[in-house]
Length: 275
Image: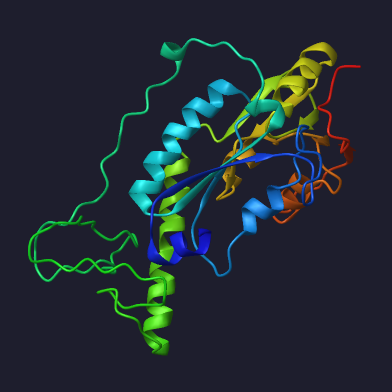
């Protein structure tokens, strides 16, 4: 389904609520073992949005934004949460959250012929919807030309794959307008607690209590490199805190040249606590 969305350019928002695995695992407990999966799920290369909110307020905000982005760019968006967040109890003032207005997707201007996969500068093709009169709307999971007809010609395969992935560049640029990386605690501390997802809460407490800087990237794909670089400027030590066995966020940031000095990993189904 995820690769189908990538190839056919279908907007979809998927929520992954993590629990200990593999297989049945421990269904009623929490974990953060699916980051690698969410980053790489689906064969082939295509643009995607991956966000990991840390509390209900962030989940509300980024879910709204994910819907807009999926429709605007015609890509899959994944909201990565976990048992602790999904079934946790929170209270917040919904009216204090920055409003996310519904953003209309790019629509066909009725100039014929209609090309479902028109190759544009941004890679975003205008949409038409059934039952548009005298128009064929062809959606295809096979590689296709601009009309949606199946093709195996090498030049068209190259052209269309580049067209689809072009959206990633424009999505990266748009996300710079949003707070994709959050900072809590003592913001001038040379020591950073790096966390993601529901660990935002416990790490914020630790930051306040012990004077650490807490960095929480919410957007994990496309990775917000410029914002991440900015918040880590002058930092001497990075401690990564994750509910998994292998330090999956640590592996992700290492792709961009960041080195974690210490990992604190917990993978017993229980969330972190101050104790």
